[in-house]
Each structure stands twice: as C-alpha cells, then as structure tokens.
Image 1 (cartoon, rainbow, N blue to C red):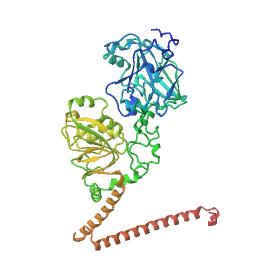
Image 2 (image 1 turned 90 degrees about the horizontal axis):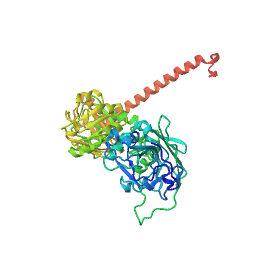
Image 3 (image 1 turned 30 degrees about the horizontal axis):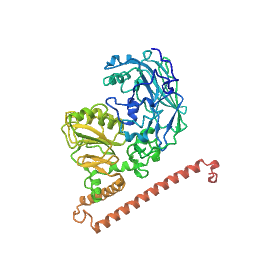
Image 4 (image 1 turned 90 degrees about the vertical axis):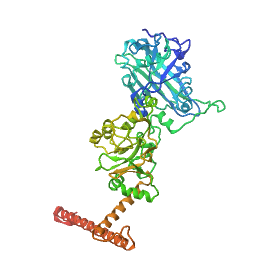
Amino acid sequence: MDAPAADSAADPRFAALPARPGKVIAIHLSYASRADQRGRRPQHPSYFFKPSSSLAASGSTIERPAGTELLAFEGEIALVIGTPARRVSLEDAWAHVGWVTAANDFGLYDLRANDKGSNVRSKGGDGYTPIGPSLFDARAVDPRGLRVRTWLNGSLVQDDTSAGMIFPLAQLVADLSQHFTLETGDVILTGTPAGSSVAMPGDVVEVEVDDPHGASSGRLVTTVTQGQVPFDPELGSMPALDDVQRAEAWGSREAAGLPAEGVPESGHLAETGQSAAESPASARCPVLADELRAKLGVAPVAGLSAQLRKRGLNNVHIDGVRPLHPESKLVGIARTLRFVPGREDLFASHGGGYNAQKRAFDAVGEGEVIVIEARGETGSGTLGDILAIRAHARGAAGIVTDGGVRDAAAVAAVGIPVYSAGAHPAVLGRRHVPWDTDVAVACGGTTVEPGDVIVGDSDGVVVIPRGIVEEVVDAAIAQEDEDAWIADRVAEGHAVDGLFPMNAEWRARFDADRAAAAAAAAAAAAAESGRGATDLSSHDRKVAPHGGESAR
C-alpha cells in the first residue's frame, strides 16, 4: 500500500496523513514498562478520543498554557487505518492497518483530574497530537517488531518495542472494531512506554518509529513554547495540581523532586544517608536503621506490648494469627493489602489480571511486611507458595494475614516468616476480592497503616506507630533487663512480694548492682585497651630504626 502524497496546501496539520481523520483513538495504558512504573496493570485495554483538531505536523510548536506546569510528552506508535474494519477477527485485524508512523500524545496533567479519564481538555488541545513526518506500509512490517524512541533535547528518554506491549497492536484494532467502524484514515495511538516525562518551554521533543528492516517514520519534531493567555475561571474549572499528578507527569516522585511516600523528612526511621528528594521513588515506607532493627530483634513482643500499654495503646495487637515458624522473629515496616468480601461481579472486575494482590507482592521491598486485611475470614486462602516465594525473593521481612493460607506446608517451606489465622485449601475468590494496596487496613482487630512497625514472635504480632518505636523498644529492653534480675533473685529463694514489682529497697539494690556491673565493665574495657597499647608500644620499639625510641 503506497503512502499517500502529502497535501499540505489544504491543511498542514494533516500533511502526513491520507486526509483529516474522522477519529483519533488513544489507549490509556499498554506497555508493560509503563504499567510497572505506574504500579498498575490493566486486565483489558481502555481508550479515549482525541479531536482531529489536536493533530500537528513535524516541526510545529506546542504551547504550554499560562498558569500550568505539567505538559508531558508520550512517544507512541500510530496506526492509520487503510480499509474499513467492523467486527474483524484478531487474525484479520492487521490487514486493515494501512500505515504506521510516529505520534506524540502530549497531555497537560494540570487539567487531568478535572476530566476524570476522558482527557478532553488535558489531551485535546491544539497541537497536542503531532504525527508523522512519514508513513510506512503496515503490510511490510511485523507488528510485533516495531520500535518507538523519544528524545528530549537530544537525549534518548524512551526506547521500547511493540513486543513489550501488554496488548498486541492487532488486538487493539480488533477490539475497537467490535464497538464501531474504523474508517479509512482513522488514527489509533497505541500507548507509550516508560520514560514519558515533562517538557518545558524551549524543549525539543523528537519521536521516531521504525522496524529492524529499515522502515522508519523519520523523526517527528515538536518544540514547546510558553503561552501567555490564562484560562478564564468564569468559564470553567481551572488547572489544579497535587503530588499524585506531579509524580505521574514526571514519571516518578523522585523525578518530580518529591519525597518518597511515607518517608519523613527527618527522624531515626529514615536514616538512609539520602535526603527525602534523593530517596528512590519506589520507596513507599520509611526504612528501619540497622541498630533499631537489631533492638527490635531482641525485644520480646510481650515486653513491647507492655510498653505500648503504658503509653495508652491497648489496641495494637493483631489477634488470632499464629506463626508458621514460631522460632523466627518478625521485624519490618508495614505494606498493606486489603480484601473486600467476595462478590462475583466484583471479582470479575477486580480479581483477575494484575490485581491488587499481585501488585502488592510485586512491590514489597526489602525489610517490609505485607499485612493483609481479610476480615478474619478463614474460609479461603489469602496467599500461597508462589506469592510467598515472590515476597521472599524481594527481601520482604514477612507476611501477616488474618485470613487463611493455602498450601500451608509449601508456604512454610519457603522460609519467610508468615502469620495467619489458619490453613484452608480454597482459592482466594471463594471469600475475597483483592481491592487496594498501601492504605490503612484492619487486620486481626487492629488498624495498620503503611509505615507502621510490625514485630512478631511466638506470642503474636504487635503494631508500633513509627513515631514512638525507638522509645518503646528501648524501654522494653530496659524492662527485660530488670525482669531478668528479678528472676535471678526469685531463683535464689526471695519472695515475690516487694520484689515484683520492686519496692524502694529492691530498687536500690538493683541500681547498686547495675552500677557495679557498669563500673566493672568499664574497668575491664580500660584494662583491655591498656594491654593493647602496651603491646603496640613494645612492637614499635622493636621495629624502630637503630633501636631508638626517639626515631618513632
């Protein structure tokens, strides 16, 4: 199929196309790399329309409107329909594509929230769909081997192939044809891979689509300019931004200059050697410093529970869960997963594909604990050995669920600490729908927030608010020391009365013993240090030139 001759005299916006298209259809999310970056993978493709008035030719400019900041580029493979398609099969769909070219699906994130998915204003502006500069014959290429690349001011920022798409190109054509006729000249924008980001006034964005055998669209060039006319608040909603839009426009919280979610700007829980803005964008929760993690590793849950009670916190126990490995200690930062009660229609829409459960286990980080809200419902499993292996491979500290575990023996064999309400052979869908992640959940009768500290041993699991974790663990360790001393006195034959808890007399004896022990330890350390210095001095005299100490 020969590429049409450009007819820029009629309208330069459509110079690369056979004619002005009747429809421009774009897909929301289609590349695995982009889905992984966003932390969500769709089960089916979803679409939106762009007006043909948004098309622009290579070499054109795009205006960032006054009062906005997040104009993002998205390099994409564009398909141009060659022959009408209506209810075509997957096998026949590609035959209805006439040409392939490059496109840039610009979007203004400042307006995205107001349109709630339709993208009418955020992606429909004049010049927001540059396309071209040349078409090449779709019949001459393998739709699975097309490459799209994007350059920002000469630096390569996007590079992926159609083999990395969640939904094959032909599937998009066949799917759309189920709903309406794809007419000759219609354009399908097939989604963007990871690497999309924000373009500033003065930036030059280039996109090229090619295949291994030499077919190429050429470079589609667009220059960003600054607009001077603001939006009129009397006519419609104004641009609005939050950190979610900033992170998605830039590609990550890190790229947007935002602290990772849940990371405090200072404090002992975030001792990573990085500023908040430098922290990895994937870090959803604060990390535990090694020294603090070690303290929590020796402090018993019973002691931590007692200290929390002294601070007025009685509802911090995850009740009804028991460990698969009672000998193992669980210490980590909470990441959360919420299930809602099973309902067939909701499971159909939320239970398949890359659902919340799979996303949680793919996203958990080193030293983190997946805490699952299953409402105490044990009539099905909430995880099995495959997910346990995934969490273990990612360095997770453990898993806590107030629901059941499927394939319990296999899960136990993985070796990762797991606390559950019991075992059950049924699959998830019998009782639960995986719903969302990294939200406050109710697990075992207590609320768990992402970032809370989770500690478990053979007595059970306790939740410690991150703001008080260090004082709680220090107090618990100090209390354990006291309790050990009291136990020794009881073993010597002393009565419990007045000793447990200690009265003033016993407290004085305890303090005196501890002071004497500290003095003895200091003296031993000083003696050891002195012996080391003496040994070193003797060694120095032996090796000094001419045997003289003054030569040192």
